[in-house]
Length: 155
Image (cartoon, rainbow, N blue to C red):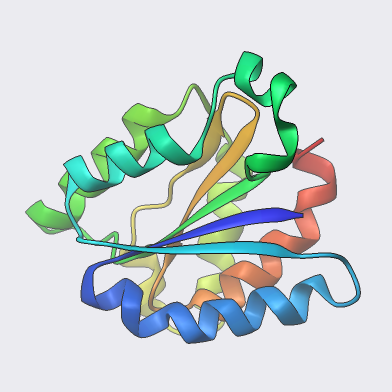
């Protein structure tokens, strides 16, 4: 699997090591191509990064090996104005929602902290790529849970 990990702001940077470890543990013996990128926790920065990381189906057909199957956006997706702006930008970038994936990530986060319920869940597709907001309050739990779903939600 090809995975892009976009870490947003201080919260994302602080959880990057845990998220990377969870990805490697979840992948096990599978091939994992991981590309990491640090971004400020700003809506514009996220939108630009998604534009460069996720390609159109035509581009993917020409050079499928260069683009990720999954984009994980790691950070704080709380209820405050700054987090809400980032979450809105992420939702706007999606073409199709994945409600069940959103629900599963919230449930997985609850195994670690009740604060996970205060995170705004976002998951869906941009072109053929699954894009998921992974809350920094429970990255390992969310990634482990998501990894089990990937064979069913990605091609």
